[in-house]
Length: 401
Image (cartoon, rainbow, N blue to C red; front, side):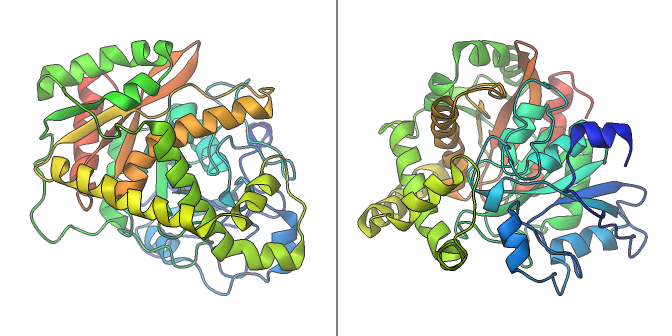
């Protein structure tokens, strides 16, 4: 391990899992890392918690998404840290150590895909796999100054990945350029198989709730990038998607996620009585106690969101919104502040999460020296067109695509 790798702390402790490419392909010559909830044959999937690692044998097969990258010529150079059981948004892991945020070392790296984001941001790998349920690719990408994609729900198989909330879980990936983000998508994403939105189409739809939800300094920092995009796509149209308020959306999302998290992991939690770091135990206690009627109301509201969002995006429109309402919290932020940030952040992330739509975040600005991202969201199934549009957008706002 190099000094820089040790300083960043992105990889899980212990022997490094390394896999050579299985063929020459579109990603030959590139190194990548994998969040430690994806299976690698013969290697324990630790899922960020020592009791999980202790009570589960090594994986018997490698996750198909990882195999696809190896077949495309990329080399896997390690597994990265995750928040315990992927049930958190700051990136903290008290058992393995919280990875450094290379872009803002006094702040959290963000998301349960914290190690993957840190590894890419530090230049330890060319790209990395993560997963996203409530924002765990989009938020660390925003916090660490990276490009990140949450694909359409169900577009890419999660076989060989540990679940949290299956109706919300997706894989995702990080890169330092929009061009590489798109190259990875060409390997992993289905081709669409039908009518596709126009690359660089539009119009832009400015999601008012998301902009109001953002801290004023964040909204102001993102305005120049938005203005450049408007010069290309046309003036953004203002839309209201959640008149009930993002707080209501967060609560419905939280209830659905909690019910599914308990179905996925509750039996193990009950049988093992694992030790958890701050906030994780409380979330599982709440998940166990979740009122089925509240979760059912959450699922019903998800259908309402889909009926609102899908028709708006069917013709190629792009939602444009702050990825996160704030830059990464500082490392000594109290737990109450972290929870408030989590609620405000998941509230905006649930727009794509509940509608099953793909969302890409671009690292277009900083606030107090810390990165903040701007997101584009389009219709489910139009992931490849979205990535091509993100490459165009990166060029428009003056970033290396």
